[in-house]
Length: 258
Image (cartoon, rainbow, N blue to C red; front, top):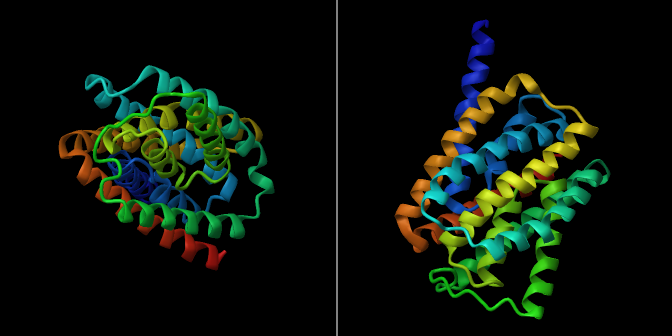
C-alpha cells in the first residue's frame, strides 16, 4: 500500500469513528459526516450512498453490543419498527436514482432543522420513558410514520435516524435513551442492511474503502452507545438538538451547491 492510499484509509477510518460516535450518542446523523465525505472524495451519489449504508450496518453492530448488555430494547416496539419501516426502505432504495437530489436535499434540510427546533421548544420531551399503550390508532399512525421515514432512509440516508428517534419519542412516548437504542440497532442493522442490499444489487460499491469504514463504524458505534447510556436522557436530548441543527444547516448549504 503506497503512502497516499494509506493516508486515505486512515482518513476514512477517522471519519467513520467520528461520524458514528456522534450518531450513536445522539440517535442518528452518521450521514452528516460520512456520506458527504465519500462524495467529496469523488464517489457518485448512488455509489457513496451504497458504500455508506454497508458501513453503517457496522454502526448497528457496535451499538448493539453495548445496548443489549443493558437490556434497552423492547420486543413489540422492535417488531413494529421492522415491519413498518423495512418496506419503506426497500421502496426508497429502489427510487433513489429518480429523486431530484437538490430539491430532496433542501426539503430534508428544512425538516431536520424543524426536528431540532421542535425538541428545543419541548423541554420535557423525551426526558422520561412514558410509553403509550399500543392501541389501534397508535399502531396505525405510528406505522405510517415509520414507513415514510423508511422511504427517506432508503433514498437519502442522511438524517433518517434522527427522524426515527424523534418519532419514537414524540409518538410512542419513549425516552431519548430508549429511542436511541432502538434506532441504532434496528435502523443501523436492519434498515441500512436492506438499503445496502438493494443498492448493492442495482448499483456499485467501493469495496476497497469498506474495511476502514467498517472498523471505524464499529468502534464509533460502541463509543457513542456507551456515552449515551452513561450521560442520561437530558444530555442525549441536547446532543440530538445540536446535531439536528448542524445537519440541517449542512444539508441546506449542500443543496445550494449541487
